[in-house]
Image 1 (cartoon, one colour):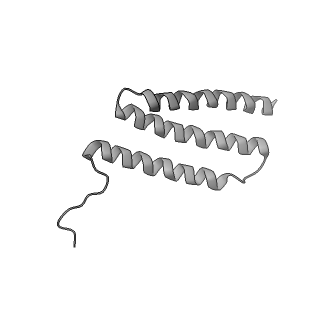
Image 2 (tube, rainbow, N blue to C red):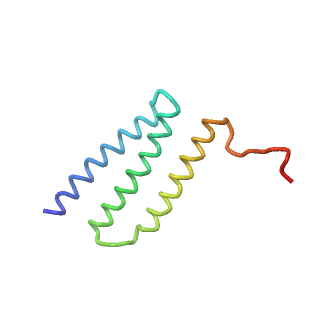
Image 3 (cartoon, helix red, strand yellow):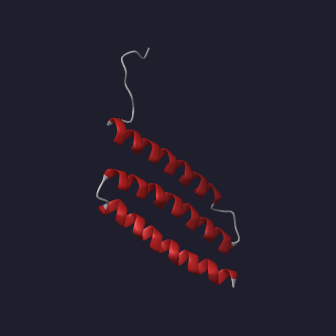
Length: 95
């Protein structure tokens, strides 16, 4: 029974990933695209976590950690770019 529930959740999460991908491509504003990319990363982490439960392994734990770090850094970089127009600040006072 538990495996059936996990398979149903994988199908629902696949639909959620498709919706996030669509919003990333179409999204009317840049903010919508950033939120969709962040949500895509979170859903992908959950998707891989459920696959780990189904396979009864922890082989993908490092993949989940890397995806989490990349999703976080990417969201912060895109938000900073959206706010300031640049990611790296190059001030003249830097010595």
